[in-house]
Length: 327
Image 1 (tube, rainbow, N blue to C red):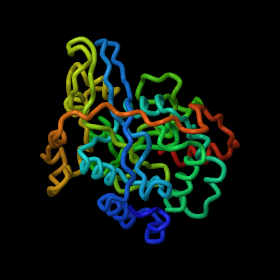
Image 2: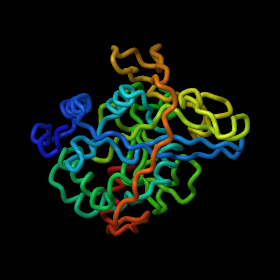
Image 3: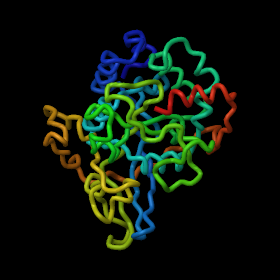
Image 4: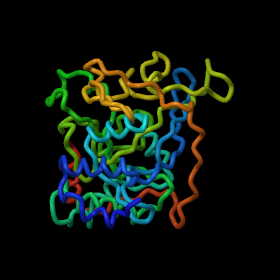
């Protein structure tokens, strides 16, 4: 592995195709920190069931332990990387549950204020990307799970309806910047005390990113417990759960959903990319080897408890944060 302090000198200073290539090249070269998995539980009261999903404790980081940075990616790159690992992008319901159940809470209002807004350059710059990652590191410890301070590119039913998308098939869908300030209710529908600066939004194309757009996929398998399943639960493919008339609500908040961007190519590892699902491409079967082992919880973060940081920014800074996140 190569540390970020060495890689940084070779990376573009701004977001764009060259930086996306740098992310993909570093990922392919093994210069990404390995995922540490944790359990995220979602309940469906209507059927009396629950599902145990596996989600990483942190977001994609390039470098080596002790010398890495959380990188920003486009929806196009996030989908590609998920495909390459046999993983999935999250939905609002899964993302909300992952934030709410994290061991360390960093309110998005806090991490987008103060020093971060004093960085020279645009919010799409690599300097902003690094500053955002450092602001998170200053408030939380790896490897314990973190919730709150980022947005993700997500799967959304809205992407399946081109008539509702200003950018058509090139529309991306972002969601996040979780907070306990009463901004906008979180979309997933199961966490009444959770709010977001960014509801699912399709303003940007699949080639856009800024400092807030991080990559945190989810595993392909989930353990489902409750009526109709064996004692102790049974593993199910999340792609199939998301389409199932009785199981979709464990995965998504507003109906059955396709667990892939409908208009981006399907790019499984080791073979050429296939057409997008809307163009006839198929999401491949789950990776070989069967269901994953239950995730092992990481050790507690030394010196940090699960906490909720109160907002400290001035009103003007809050409006600035809203301007960049309400898109």
